[in-house]
Amino acid sequence: MAGPATAGSVREALAGATDALRAAGIEEARFDAEVLLEHATEWGREKLAAEPDARVPAAEGRRFAEMVRRRVRREPVAYIVGVKWFRNIELAVDHRVLIPRPETEMLVELALELRPDRALDVGTGCGAIALAIADELPRCEVVATDTSPGALEVARVNAERLGLAARVRFLEASVPEGEEFDLVVGNLPYVAEPDWASLQPEVTEWEPREALLAGRDGLDVIRDLLPGCVCCLRRDAKGEANGDGVLALEVGEGQAAKVAEMMREAGLAEVDTRADLSGIPRIVIGRRGAPA
Ligand code: GLN
Image 1 (tube, rainbow, N blue to C red):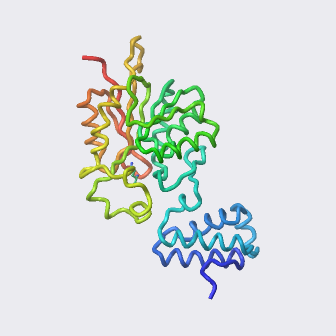
Image 2: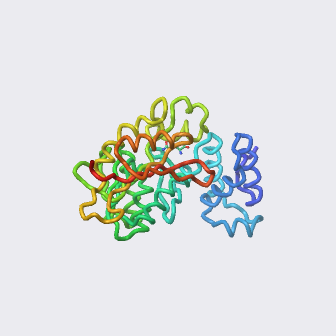
Image 3: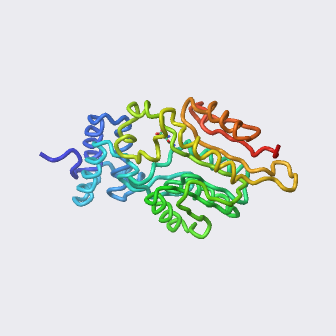
């Protein structure tokens, strides 16, 4: 018997793979099958859509079958194909880094509004936020930190691939010392331990735990790093309107009010939250207040 995704036509390959993925409990089975076949054949969506009767060559068919087998085990598509789009850049990703999520693009949108001269991305992972800011704000000097050497390796490769290596400085640290920034952003780990079991297997079985889990309430990492983040916010010396540095953190559902309170306690002013497309308060923003 042929496996679910062995050769045949594009139509047959997609039908077989969709069935196999659906049986594995994957909701977007058809879509995932299309993305995997696109990568296995390197044919592009248009050709796959326009030529359902085209024969999938044997080597490509085998590659596709292997990709489908991995997806059946609930490995995320992004790890299987090795890349993920974020804003206008394609990032290499593997099991050492969290796969960038669309809601995290909100932090880049904020950077575009604020137009910082110097920006810091705390816990950069694959480099998504830092590299997107460097890509979209060509005059901004960007620093990115991570405590995971594996993640920094991925981020540096991405910087090279994107031609942004000269514009982004990566540091193995939680927060850099003795530096000042107009904007500090971070998508730090924020999953609460009791919520772990309810997450998709794509997350719990494949993504790096240290990029996700943050203690009982999911706020341990933010709590730890908040003072350091506040310290490296620029203090306005010239009395300019909006001259003080801004901190913006992504948070999980139900965490925004608590993080806003933590920011106020840490001395930040104008603390505000912004909701994502699902209406969930997703980023918490605060400005360094005038010194007391
Ligand atoms: N958004 C991720 C998830 O839903 C969590 C990211 C994080 O912990 N920073 O799994």
